[in-house]
Length: 395
Image (tube, rainbow, N blue to C red; front, side, top):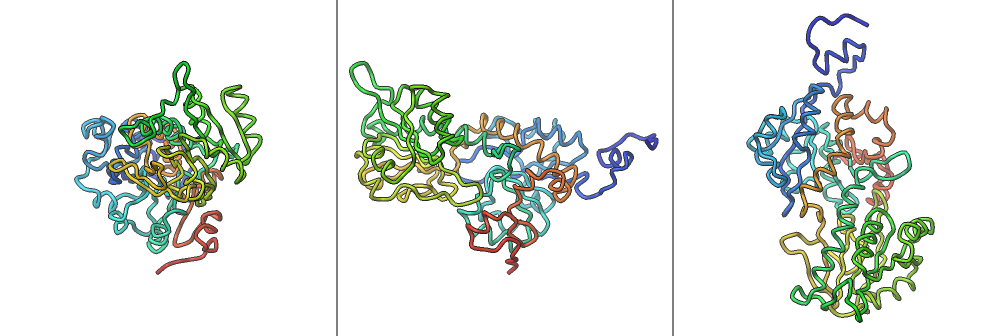
């Protein structure tokens, strides 16, 4: 090993060890404040920033970015971050932006060629953003398509767990009569049967929703197209859930008696399939509630549309619809800590190596690459947007 007589930064340490790739070393990482309505999460916690700074990277944090999780600017300064007064300056200076939610329209003009944007993107449901990122030559890496060796989605999983558990909590609230619901208590009481919860999907959201609903004592039915997933759920919650194949007839029968419907269907990188038609919703009991957790991927229910924490519900066909696309933003401390635990190793790899080398070294991180240098890089996203993979769209 070459002798190094001076204190080593992350860059000099790697050069001294013979790891001479300059790309990505001593990277400037930007953390802007989230501006989506009632979004209180933050891309990096002070603890995560301390780790990145120890690797020799500079982290720029927008003033008050962490207020929603109780982290003040002083906490970030102690961790080694530099506080910036406005988001535009961060986007202008940072080589990689780490966020929680997809760039909002007000942020689009700040994106630039070669800049890495690492966040939830959900581009299949937002073709306008996809086109903007293509035109600007941004490197867009979506949390929601990064995979694990077993095929699971490790960066989506913590938010799916939060949203799945919240979906039952939210549904129970809106079933109350003062909130517009039909006046059903999900656990029931002695002599009165419990409320009926129908869950479409047995992935991470569906499993967590089923655990919560069954724990409350509700009557729970889970519909899914995969038998192994349903077997796993029955094994985990024996006698506490009913399962069925998600055929059109099966969905219709379940919804006709449902007090609460939870949409929990996911096709990674693609738009959520529409499994529930307007006619099916029309047959649900008046005052029942729908929580479409898939809404950030376009929703799996025909009558659903995106809402915000400011105005979370609307009524269609006599049924309350909740379609908040950033549900975990309501519990930002829990959600941010869970998200950072999952994302930090990937942020660190991207910063230490640069995005190209990091993806060569980790094919699972490479699955997160949605857009780069004016080309669609994820085949499922390309199909959803009707654009050939690697086809340019540089306006």
